[in-house]
Amino acid sequence: MFTGLVETTGRVISLQERGEQARLMLEIPFAPELELGESVAVNGCCLTVAAIEENAISFDLLAQTLALTSLGALRENSLVNLERALLPTTRLGGHFVQGHVDATGTILDLSPRGQDHRLEISLPEKVQRYCIPQGSIAIDGISLTIAELHPHSAVFWIIPHTISRTNLQDKTIGAPVNLEADLLAKYAARFHEAR
Image 1 (cartoon, rainbow, N blue to C red):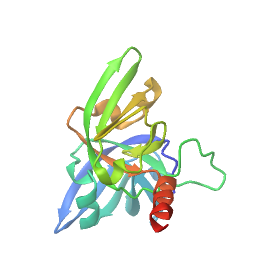
Image 2: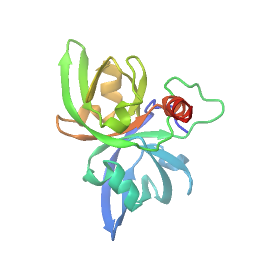
Image 3: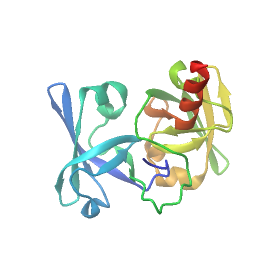
């Protein structure tokens, strides 16, 4: 479980295909604190530490992970968002993020507006159905508040702190992003459908 408050960013060292799977190697600032088997959210996708070599951490990506997320599009030196799993004593400043990506979207707009940035992301219907204005969604693992909800997209206002601390600083229009709808919205919809 994660909060969607990106802890830091890391860089891709390599992404090696292994048949239908892949191995992702990242340069991670908190690498010395990690252990084999530990969970780390990488662009909002919960991955398990498979190998540790000094500041290089490797993760095995399943075929399903490659099919459902944007991780397969990563290239050497790509900037990625990183967050370690919640501790029981952690403040929950974002929202509950599982690291289970529902779908990918595309950046439609990322433009400066004064000191802030306007971010618009395309939303597939299977994610959009769980969204409400002023609700939460994780975009590449970043807990964001929906400012405007449109039939096929959502708009977010991004403060300078978020731009400087996440991979949004390297993103461009057309880039794919991982989407995880709010967990509580998913449960509410399931209960409503069951009635």
